[in-house]
Image (tube, rainbow, N blue to C red; front, top):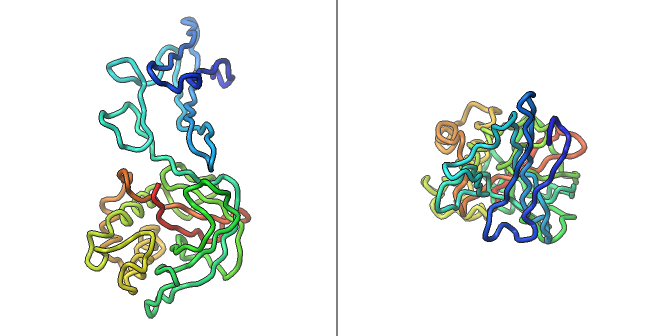
Length: 273
């Protein structure tokens, strides 16, 4: 883009980037200050298909261009599984549906006596209407509450899903990117704490039943809904989790939010990207 107007597209679709770099260029009028924008699209899974996804936008003036390494090449990687550090490292891609689907609350745990919902967490959610091929699919899953100050009922909601690894959709204010980094830190380090050693984040029934209460309280503590109790998994996450990115093979929180009103509480669950 030049001054906000698209004037050229570059693509390596014919050879998918194998064997040579993609050369990009632009004309610079030395008598003017001109603003340029490059958008980086990468061919990534979208359901059972592949589609180009916007990964980053670079803005610069005149001949400055995008920051490169010493080799003069802009290299990047999605995720952090690379032999040599890239100029740009982007979060791992999570293949999530863009369209709404339904979420029905089917069971809830009791915070007072420690009895969990069926799947070992605070809230069981039934997801339906998700096309095949995504990293999330129809079925019943355990989840946690991301907003203690909003009520939620045993009913069906039209929801969308968002990854904690990418910018949040406009309108979500109950939780911040830094808080999601801290929650991701907590989930990925739970196995280091007493009682959680054998945890399987796919099934919270893998830990002694009362411990899910600490996980829920930790989330509420991290997002600022409560100040006590403050379990160690929460205080450690707030102290160390800012800027955290899950390692390869790690887990990333996904967010379910109501498309009809952003005021309805959000639900969180860990997902292996």
